[in-house]
Length: 269
Image (tube, rainbow, N blue to C red; front, side, top):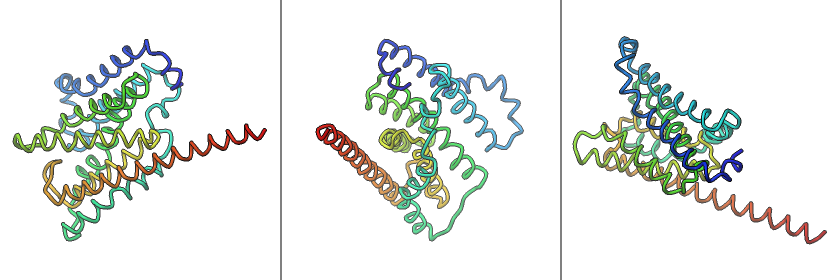
């Protein structure tokens, strides 16, 4: 299915327009439509409201968009959800050990987390729907099926992801810092998603563990953070990138070895 779609360059513009249209609807329609249904959510717990919002605009909208654009066949593969759940969980946990150990040391091993808001939304809901919306839908579909190059798709994803987090800053400097940190993080997540054979679970769990460690040890009030908080976060990112590079090289070597064996068998016959 993927190769068939990629061999139709005349459809690239149409795919791009539709993907971006669903992205814009998912990102901005909620604010425009909220006056018409917001009264239904007024009395709900804030964490539940956040879940409903994310599930609707970052979950259902891109899911429906993918089905309408490409059909239901191969949906799990197209969105990176059909393989690698446990592998993604284990690898992501190991990748984030620098943050876990470093933050625990800074906080004197004192955990302080709100289970409803920080854990349920910050650790579970937000990472899943953000990765589904930005990595699987926006970056993944543009790169894999709409003919976009790696860097155009990655940079667009990073710019848009960074932009939605700017509000976490309390002044110009912190807003720019938040934009840079989250934008670069999105670029890294996109590349990791691609190089680990489109395993969305890996970047979901990587995002989730990074959020959890950050909030559990109360590192900062926004995504930019303090010096030591960012030192251990950079260490985690370097581990993730380094492991990804090694995995990519290993996979290429295995592929080359397999091709060499096939060639030798053909020559032997």
